Image (tube, rainbow, N blue to C red; front, side, top):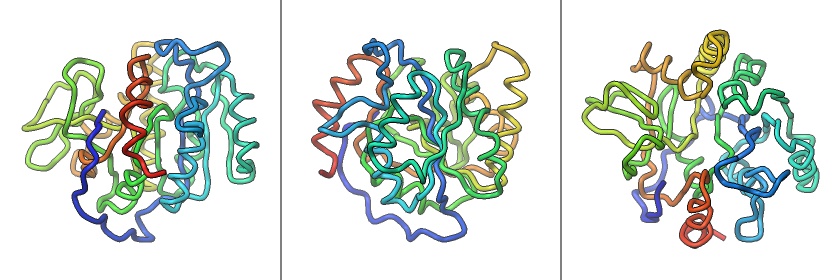
Length: 264
């Protein structure tokens, strides 16, 4: 997570071939570690007078995304009601993961139809507060499959790490085997090409078939990275403010530190 808010230059111009116009948002989880009131998903947290979901939609629209596919599970009716309140039901499709308590892999695996549709896709964790410039940077970054990386990373096993050597992504995950020459924290936002999205769907299916030993979607991305590291690129967002919201302290940080650095 990063609280910096400097500027490193204007993003490259988006190209029609690489940018995505559909986003997959994973918003099915319970958020047990945050200790929210029953029935309130994290994506409905109010931050600066707007729900986190409303902020996602606004940032995506500014980055040229016009269609949204949400994996829902916990308190799905509350999420549907928020989408209706925002007037975005026609642009939004809901995919239900009834096994939402068993890990994020199943929430991504449920999106197989979207991932194999033959078009680039943005994949996003729903529990992140961030500068909308991140999505513009993700869309405009060159490369086939792109992830956002923050070079300011907290120590420990919790952050998902993206590891690089000679500018190439060599490992990915909370406990990577190869830390590379340097590593940063993955924001949890990705852009996949049509081919990359289809490969991700297949990797999720393989992992899901193995049972409960590995039920986090990052493991499926790691499978792709380890198989073909040259097909992944990254965009550095170390200068932009963001935080994942997993624990009560993260929510305090989001409200007290990150919000003040975001455009109004």
